[in-house]
Amino acid sequence: MDLMAQADAMMSAVWMAAGLLIGAAAAVIITQIVAKTRAKALQEELDARIETAKKQAETIIKEAKLNATAEMMEKREKFANETAQKEKELRNQELQLSKREDNIERRTEQLNQRERKLAEGEKEVARQQQSYQDKHKELNSLIAQQKNQLLKIASLNVEQAKELLLQQLEDECEREMSQLIQRKVALAEEQAEEKAKEIINLAIQRYAAEQTCEVSVSMVDIPNDDMKGRIIGREGRNIRAFEKATGVDVIVDDTPGVIVVSGFNPIRREVARLSMERLIQDGRIHPTRIEEVVNLTKKDVHARVTQIGKEAAEEVDVRGLNNKIIGMLGALHYRTSYGQNVLRHSVEVAFLAQVMADELGLDGSIAKRAGLLHDIGKAMDREIEGGHPAIGANFLRRFKESPIIINAVEAHHGDIPADNPYTPLIAAADAISASRPGARRETLERYIKRLEKLEEIAAAFDGVEGSYAIQAGREIRVIVDAQKINDDAAYKTAREIAKKIEEEMTYPGEIKVTLLREVRCIEYAR
Image 1 (tube, helix red, strand yellow):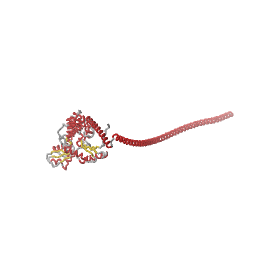
Image 2 (cartoon, helix red, strand yellow; image 1 turned 30 degrees about the vertical axis):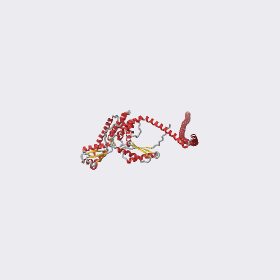
Image 3 (spheres, one colour; image 1 turned 120 degrees about the horizontal axis):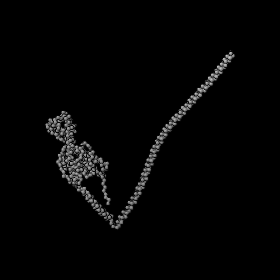
Image 4 (tube, helix red, strand yellow; image 1 turned 135 degrees about the vertical axis):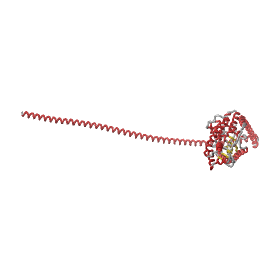
């Protein structure tokens, strides 16, 4: 029993030992398996990290390559742009150099051509000179031969031959004069109809009208001499305010019962006269009242001017005039020329031009319109520089008047050439109206003296052959010797004549100085 127990104990111990060994072996095996598993996991993790590192390295390498490639492309593009810019600059420089070379070559070629032409010209001149010399010798020889033959044949001496030649020349001159007379007669016949019309124009001087001469001052009646003191005012303030408001001069002197309003602008003078009469009637004379009355009078006068213009247009039966043109016509009522009322003068010219136009088969309505408007520039010539024909023409152009009317206005004193048959009619009617008896205040003696003075001033200059006052003294024509006065001196002489006229004479408007210098050679080819 004990042995069995011992044996069992030993078997148990053996089995325990075997179990321990097996457990230890199993533990070792499990440990190894776990170690292998961990080693494999670590290896796999290591491989994965290595793979990731490789991929990251490849990515970095690729990015580096891409960046390098982009940078290289950018540098290459920059280099290409710089290279293209340099090439463009070089091409431009090359083109400029090429142009300069072409210009130099062209100029060189031109110079060479000029040299060749000069050389050819010199050769041609030399050849012609030699030819002329040969012909001259030949001609002299031929003349000598013919002279000897003539003397031998005619048995004449030198004096007799001269007489025969002069007789032949005289006969030839007579034939030429006869032919010239025939041509002049034919020309006169061709111009006969035109001359007849001019004679008709000059003969029509049938119109006459009553004329009132006006001056540059207006008289205003006052009830008593005490009114002069009120008009002057304390320390002259009233008269200064009046002159400032009206633009005229007021003369208060010892003349009893009147004061004088003086001014070259007729409308301002009329405004001042009416204003003064209203102030005297009103009795209230002080600066404020003066300004009120003057402003009111200006409105009345401007309305009156427009009404006068309308009445003149209706009298002449001219329609379709602009209101501003009508206003300027009315202003002519207060303007005089040598005492002749310019508006009445314009109406006369309109009627005269119509009569002449009807006689010549032209349109009388156009002639009337041109005649009425021909002096409209005189309503503005005190405010605008220049002659009244040019001022009037420029004014009418603004209102689209016809070219015929504008030319008649601008050319009726001969400042520009006439381009229609109505302009000479207006010039003739203007001369008729101005020169008829009683039209103007200037006497015949003073008129003649003024023309003679004009001609005398011009004739006093060296080189002047003749001087002629025309256009009723509005223009002086001066003819000079072309041998003594050249073109440059002609302008200087004209200016000096105009300046001397300004210094020594008194005249209305302006005087045109026309200096003529020419070398005239006339011959006829038959």
